[in-house]
Image 1 (cartoon, rainbow, N blue to C red):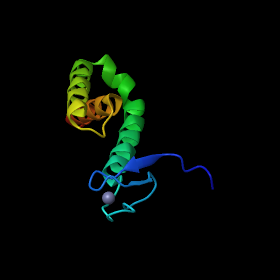
Image 2: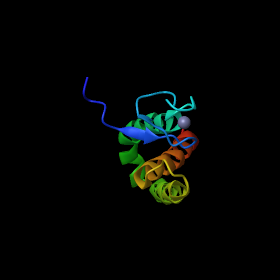
Image 3: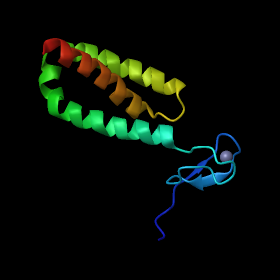
Image 4: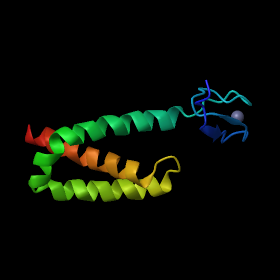
Length: 104
Ligand SMILES: [Zn+2]
């Protein structure tokens, strides 16, 4: 296979491994699991927002969701492996879930 192009640098020993590897080739430290979990979570909440976002955004809760997105982006700025977009999605999802649960 020639599709493995992405590589990650081990934060512990700086050895490079494929993004798909679970453990560092240099020191054996677990690799990418946190980022992968965050990515999977972001995909899940993005789908959830896609389902409920339209109706929520029409309500006053939309403002709180936007505030949550801003907060998420701020958190993302402090956490290296989150992109700003991912942080915004996560923040919005937290606000959306809270709003959703309260309403139901
Ligand atoms: Zn390592």
